[in-house]
Length: 388
Image 1 (tube, rainbow, N blue to C red):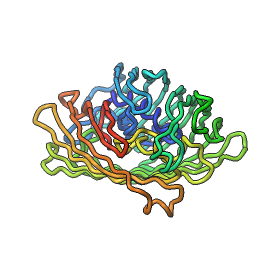
Image 2 (cartoon, rainbow, N blue to C red):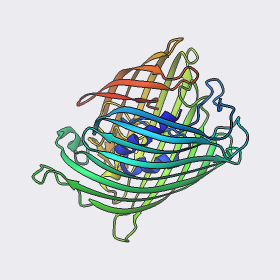
Image 3 (tube, rainbow, N blue to C red):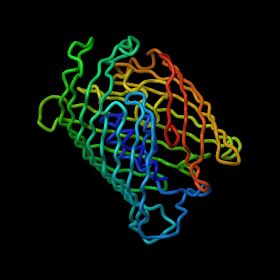
Image 4 (cartoon, rainbow, N blue to C red):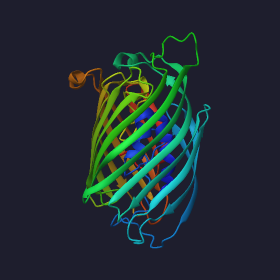
């Protein structure tokens, strides 16, 4: 379960503005410091029913390290200290989680974050909040398909201060709706003054963003579902806190479907997702392949980015009677400057295979080792939790 919290920070490292907001917006936070997922801070789920298995109330402390490999910041480690706690006396309900997470990588990137994911009113309400700071060193490739294909990049350093929160209400079983709000202050500095690319003229930003989130979740469990689906629709409306130009919107839609061919031993999973960022968005607010939840593996985060992007992918997951499993996956993506151009844009294919090791005997949460091929070569992913 909550080892997944560790992925929150690593995932945000690669997803920029939207990633930070998403950690707060989503009732399901999945894991991947490699930038493939969204964090999922769910309590231990019963493999059969998807409910919290531990019957005890009170407070349970958590401390865990998690090594990872990210295509932009390299190898690193995240460390989390947190508490599982309850606002409801009913121990059959999933509990709340609070945590402080820190991350450091081999290229000098680091960050720290505090979060609370609260459930109360018998899970009729879900409140979440995040505060944090990141100092990231990574490569900027430019904007658009041509820039990604050229493969030229410059090293930059970005700092981010962030505070974000959301309050979701259960409308009907499985469906949560509610408002969100994000404040972010970011600065970007090139590390090479004679670089072949110029950073866009939005290197300093003080942004605020009210938003809306709808999520439909009928998965039987969170970690290795074999039936049900997960759908999300998110909208964030960014403007500059100081009043200068720089307003933009960011819309995201995603749907994952899970079907057990042989129960949980052989599962087919499909995912469709799209992103739009119209307006005067900074480059780190655009839609980017390889970043955020439901990302397509096989592409360096940020190498292909633009105002619009779509991804279609599928994965076949197999599991033994013990703790081992394996996967085969593939898909394609498109990026474009205008929504009218997206379906005529060039296809960016990807595929790969992976191994799984179940970390606990009772709950199907896995250590993940994937190797994926994209148009520009292969990438290794090492983390906890599934890609989608």
